Structures are given as C-alpha cells and as structure tokens.
Image: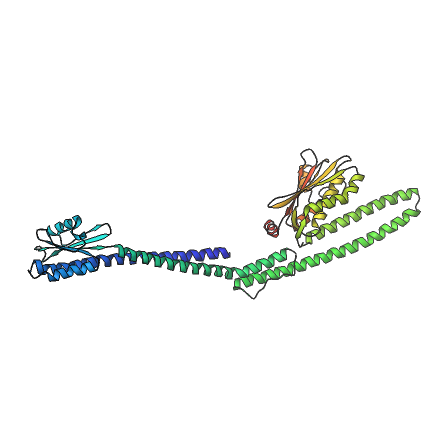
Length: 454
C-alpha cells in the first residue's frame, strides 16, 4: 500500500511538473527569440535612419559611420546599400554585405517593406532607407544568434535543475506519506500475524491512525477476544472430557483385569474379549481427543529440521517394523527446514508410519524422503502395501473415514487437522509400483505460511 501511495504521489508530481514547466520553457524560449528578432529589427531601423541623413538629405556621413561603429562594438555586422545596390558603407565584419545580404537588398529595392533571412547562426534583417516607395538605399543588420541560444540553453538547464530538485523533494514526501498512511495498517497486519501464529493474547492498538483504521482495529480486537474465548472454552472442554472418560475406563479395565485373574476358563475367554474391547474403546477415545485438540490448536511455528525429525521417527519405529517384518527407511540427505509448530511434524509422521505399518504385509517396505524447494518442503511416506481405492482416498481424512487396516479411522484425520493448523497440505496418491504414497507439503517460512493460509 505504501508503495502504491508513493508511486501515485510521484506520478502526480511529475505530471504537475510537466504541465507547468514544459509550457513555461517553451514560452520563455519564444519570448527570447521574439526579443532577439525585435532587437535586430530595431537596430536595423536606427541604422536606416542614420543612413537616410547621408543618402537622402546629403548630410555628412558622420552619423551613419557612428551607427556602424556602434553595431560593430555590439558584435553585429552592418552594411548600407545605395539605390543602385552598390555598398556605400560596411563594418569590418562583411556578413551583411555577402550574397545573402545582396539578395535581401534586392528584395527591398523591389518594393518590400522589410526582409529577413537566416544564414547559419546569423539573422539578417534588411529595411529601406527613406520613405516607402522612394527608398534611397537599403540598411542591413546581421546579428549572431549564439548568445541567444546560450541563454535559451541556460533557461532549460535552470528549469531542468528546478524540476529535479522538486522531483527529489516530491519523492521524499511521497515515501514519507506512504509510510505515514500505511503505518497503522502495518501495525494491524503485524498484530494479525502474531495472532495467527498462536499468540491469542495479541491485540491491535486502537489509539493511532485514521478513524477507519481505529474501527478496523477495534473490530479485530473483538474478534480476537471471541476466538480466544472459544479456543479456551474448547480446550477446557477437551480436558474435562479426557478426565471424565479416561477415569471410568481405567477403573473398569482394572476391575476386569482383577476378575480375569480368578476366572475359570470359560469366563476368562469372555473377559479377554472384554479387555480387547476396552482397549479398543480407550484407543478410540484417545484418538477423538487428539483430533479435538488438533482442531482447536493454534501452533506457534518455529524452524524445524524436517530431515532430522524423519530420521528420528524412523529410528523410533524401527523396532516395531522389525517385529512385523517390514523394512522402514529414511532417505533425507539434505537439510530441509520447515516452519511448523513444535512437535507437530513428529505427530503427523507417527500417524502416517503407524497407518503404513498396519497396511504393509510382512516382507514389505516403507520409505520416507524429504526434499526442499523454493516454495515448500515435500515429505513422502511411500509403502508397497495394498493401497487404497480412489473413493477411500477421498474419504480418508474424515473421522472414521478409513478403517480397512483395522484401526479406528482417526490417524489420517489427525494428520489432516494438524497440517491445516500449520498451513501445510497432506494428500494421498497411488504408489506407481503398488501401495500408497502420503505427501506432506510443509511451509518453509512465515511469509509462505501466511500466503498458504490466505
């Protein structure tokens, strides 16, 4: 936002400078040229008046020679032609008496009121000497335009320097304005980012910025209060349910264990079945509570080494895999740094490995790989078990959505909830050689995490 404001402000400054300075420059240039031409014509008229005293009134040529001397002193070239177009007087500079001057003199003698021409950097002006229609001769004045061009260049240089100075000031003002306008929104965005990272106690300031931003901050704070209250209530509910369910289950299991010790053979078989169901019920309760916690958890992500965690989890599950005759391996040769809540990747991998061990028959294998890209960390849990149908894969992340392995159908739901809380993604695909491939795409930084979450 601040960049857009700065660009718009700079654009307006540039437009104003162009609209104001460029026309001013052309106006000053036009005035300078007009003044130059008027000055040459005025001097030519004065020379003609002095020459008339000599050619028409037959006075001494002193005044004419004096006018020629003044013209030479100014750096001009001048010449006076008689009625028969021969040169009567000329300055040391003969520019006014050359071919171009002779042509202008002929035009005046032919009846023109005045004539002018440009010869390179020189402007030549010819006027009649004496009354119109009865000219006694022609006076020609030539003046070099280099000084005028230098003044015009200086004007444009001054205007350009002024433009650059104003533009620099405008850029600085635009940057300050953009930051000033966007600062309250930046603070609000930072508060929202901290809140999204798990700091539920974060609140946005409501005493700074425009009224609209203050109202937005107040609305954000009300939302944050509500979310914090709901998350806290849900966490308390999960804790209460955990206590209320596990305590009677534990007591019931202990009583069944005591009865099983003194029971006869027939009763012992029934009690063994009851113990199995109690164990299954306990596992189901634990799974439901884990899903509930995952749904209400707000992780505070940090940088974790996904490759090291994968290697650690393989080492932890290797005894179980050996016992079942399954080969469990991890291939993570390069560092892979992900942005996740502490312990979340371990829990996701544990559930994926547990599901794979339940599905892969003896002699099968499970392989975990981790690769890093510019956008995310991709972890794959690949097995060569029986795999899953497309319909089963579509329903696998729902509660009780996949129970073909004999589990309670909550493991993949837990993985999906934890991944969603961390702005990660989990998908299931067929293994090309047969089996199932679970792919975890993990964010690599806070920026990518926020982008994925939006």
